[in-house]
Image (cartoon, rainbow, N blue to C red):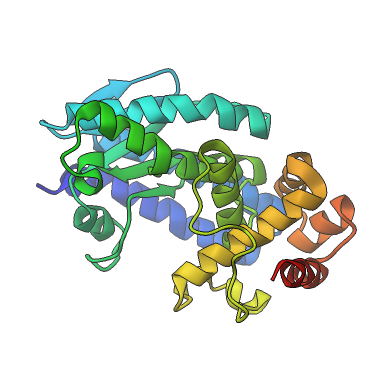
Length: 286
């Protein structure tokens, strides 16, 4: 079954909104772009809720989980994890969101990948996109463990802490956040909450991506390296500034500043200086 069958009208609305956003992005200054980004996010959030209203729902204080028949247990596991992490992340970011967040459960990774036009074999457990979260049913990748064990594993290494962090970064920065920096923050917050990381912050190969290359984050050939590098960079920055410093940088991004401007105001560095200091830090630990 294809979950996107009921998304026709909503999908068209979102597409139109995104095309308008692209035109605004090209024609207008940053503050206007951020308002349009917020509008597009809310339209997409509404569109997913409207387009999946035929599905079953599990609703909590902060989330509405939509799922197909037979996936009630998966919905319960996902909702419990989401509601567990939400207040912790909200406290870290110092904000609460204005509306409940829709979460859509997919029966397998291929269906989730197909909804974004990605290759079917892309290894994807969850995705944040424009005010919504989409996840693969936990049993697909956890296996045949007992339901209680599935819930435990999903909270420990599942995607919810990571994707909810992306959600909060989006709201705080109002979309004005480089993709690679956003990814580093999401990994770092996930690490703070669950202890999970692909590798320790200091375990980065000697060959790294340049800042120019990081701006093409999703197209880098070695995604494992890209994720490890951005996590390491943000973990180093947090060690220098504390979480409050990271939050201050994101808040300045939300006011329309560039990452260089925000870093200079909070830390006194630009991004190039940050990279040099981070590399020195790595060398000291090698």
